[in-house]
Length: 363
Image 1 (cartoon, rainbow, N blue to C red):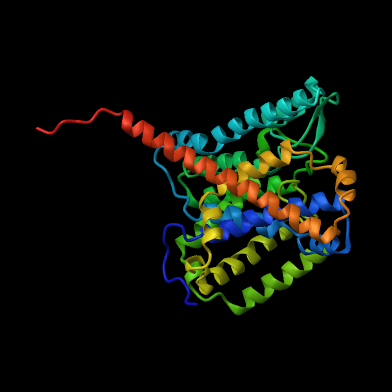
Image 2: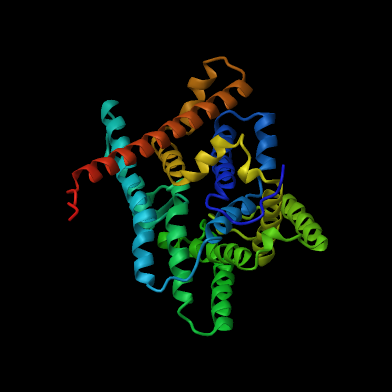
């Protein structure tokens, strides 16, 4: 397989597809740990324990095409339509579906929907009690959307600083401050503002990779070895997490995840995997990663992925390994069907809109 020689549109579609599947797998492992623990689940949990690199890769890939916009307000409006609008649309859908299912079962109470609505409105990725009294749940996978929005807007604002050195100082100062901030178990700020600052550094690393054409040059062997050994060390001894804002080794955790991410991206480019013929499904998921994320986030919030499923699953008398892979396949098929439905729906609306426009007559 020949490596990629230059940038092209959709170059990271396959990588994003892999990352979306990893997100699904990690959440599925967490569900099985709580409901159907087994030796296989424990092994997979250990293999995916250090998730910083996967999250860093997602933001680095997103930052690869980031550039300075002359009109940052216009940029913010476009990003709001692309990222915040789906976030709030999914809030309405998730709240509506939870209410519908509760009504069908005769168990509707305002507490069925209020924790979810508040989680979206506050921006919560860890359940907590607001003001010590109001229970707020988590938006789970949806936290990516506001973080991408605010991270991108922050970078555009920093570009307004005329001095390049001062820009870099402010940017990495924000990152260091965010990494130093307490974890979300101790203190959560609304709208993922802390995570937006940590994502800012990964977005910038992605942008610099493109600016300096790093992925199309041989990486120094010393860098590759150091990044790999550091990743192995952190995988063994650190439980860092971007969403939880947990950094036991402070900036070492942060930069270690990014450094190994650069190694992974270089291998990805060198392998030519992005242009391989047999990666159609991964490429599809990557191209429509926003739809994938929305559908996965919806099923996490709406479906009862918790201890209540333990007894019904055990009564099936199906081996835990078969259940693990069978439910994972069903979840994947559900999310893909939703992606296809959203895609077809958008195409239909676009055709209707085009058909409704008056045809201009030529002179």
